[in-house]
Image 1: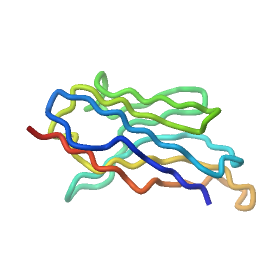
Image 2: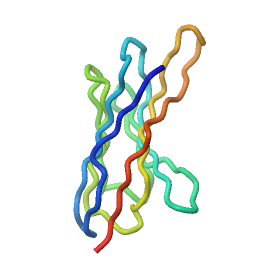
Image 3: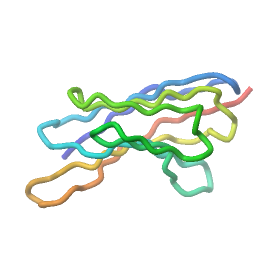
Image 4: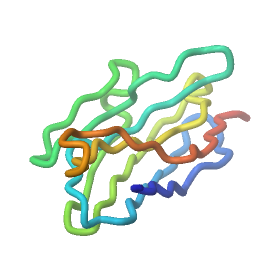
Length: 121
């Protein structure tokens, strides 16, 4: 099993910033795409940002220009820098990694436990 451990959530005022980090354990597996998702109360989980091994990024329209995703392939970590936060960004944020499992002969998704981000004055 691959474990993803997230950190960096918390309470911040509108216009503020937070940085989320996620580290993958059991890194002898090959990790492919990594990303951040979020789920607000009563809503479905949605993609916020993703990044390939080569560094190609993809963002939800609502966060473009405010959030930046980055990764360190050597350390198997992915970060999400969130600036100019809005109350609508309030949600539980989850880290996800697509991992090649040789025994399964396919890539499987692994999720972190989630970290709460609350944007409120």
